[in-house]
Amino acid sequence: MTERRKEDLQMSKRLKDFLTKNWGWKILAVILSIILWVVIVSVNDPVEKRDFTAKVSLENKDSISQQGKYVSVADSALSVTFRVSAHRGVMDRLRNTDFIATADLNYVDKNGKVPIQISCSTYSQNQVKIIGATHYLQVEVGEKQSKKFMIRPATKGNPADGFAVKSASVTPNVVTVEGPASIVKKIDHVSAVADIDDVSENVTEKVVPVFYDSNNEEINTTRLTLSTSTVNVSVVMESLKTVPIEVTEPKSSELPDGVSISSITTDPSQISLVGDAKNLNSITRISIPFSVIDLNTKKSSFSTEVDITSYLPKNVSLSEDSKSKITVTVNLESQTSKTISVSTDNLTVNNLPDGYQAAFAEKTVSVELTGLESKLSSIDADKLTGSVDASGLSEGDHQVSVKLSLPDGIKAQNATTKITIKKKTTENTDSGSTTDSGSTNSGSTDSNSTTSTDDNNTSNNGGTQ
Image 1 (tube, rainbow, N blue to C red):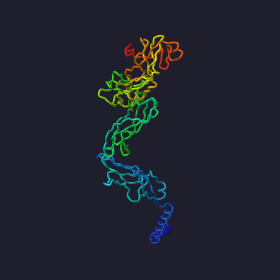
Image 2: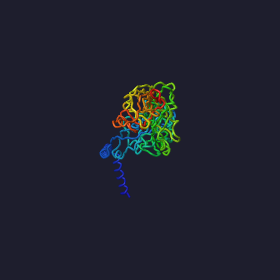
Image 3: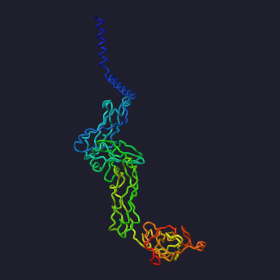
Image 4: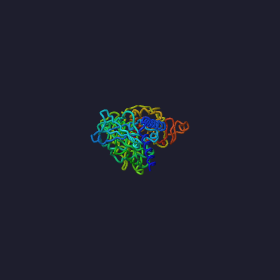
């Protein structure tokens, strides 16, 4: 037992000497061990710096809205790029999605700057450090306004031939706009436009409403909040037909004394109608009675407006692009007179007694014509034809009335010429200077020539009929 105890005492002494002696060397050994460990770790897992990008989320936005103000941030500003410091082992596992960036709008300053708080959601602040200066989000804060607008339905493009838009409606027809007052105040109207190019049946199209100012310039709505981003525009189609417009020509008895009409025109000259195809098929024109035009005080050409809707057939109406009022232009001309010489070769003698022949005493006859100047100027005397009436006339010289074949609107004053009636002879027949019944020759005619005449002025030797 004594030896065993001695051994224990010796072991205890050696251990005590190990712990209590040579402290300098021991401390140096520990320090060197730590340095060596740090060097080894630094070589195998060094600290690195890298840039990351994270989306910025806004906090307490409602608190700004409750103050009657808006906050506007450009889309490009809603991200932030920052530098991170971490050991390579951690750095290699980091992703952009590991970082959270927030901007608390309660801390916006007078210049519109909000500090951005950045943190890592997967590692502690000791493992991942955000380095560099504080990042700021630039925002715009201003007065907010909310307003409702009616949405106007509209169409663009050309429908298929023979079709037109009957009506257009939009659902919903009201949009609520909220955003900067400076923008909302510029809005004048809102339109939703459906494309009907080559369309021949009813359609419904989903479209984005467009906002316009008072100058019909489109307004950018990216900074506005809309109650609806799309609407449905429903378009109802119907048949279309274009027909001419005419004003009925008045009778001469309906015109005031001394008034003559050379032409009547309308602007437009035709009009488009819409309705059921079966109703349109029977319509060929729209007629306006001349009685609606007042000539009593008119002395020269004039224009007047007429509402054409009163003269449309039932169950049809004007197309959307047709105006209800048209312009009627009445061109008036004054009556004038003109004296012409008509060759008696162009005149025939009607109703000669059997066995008699007639010859004109003169080669021409003077006739005074009255009518519109435009019509008189177109008269060619060489081409005018006419007749005289020999009913009841005996052999001898007679003064007879001449009746000319004249265009409408031209009248002739009473004109007379002298004819000589003789019995037919064989000599006259053979020589050709006289004609048999039913023929005319060089101013001579027989009893069967056929043209009209004015019997009231026929005379024999100045007064015999």
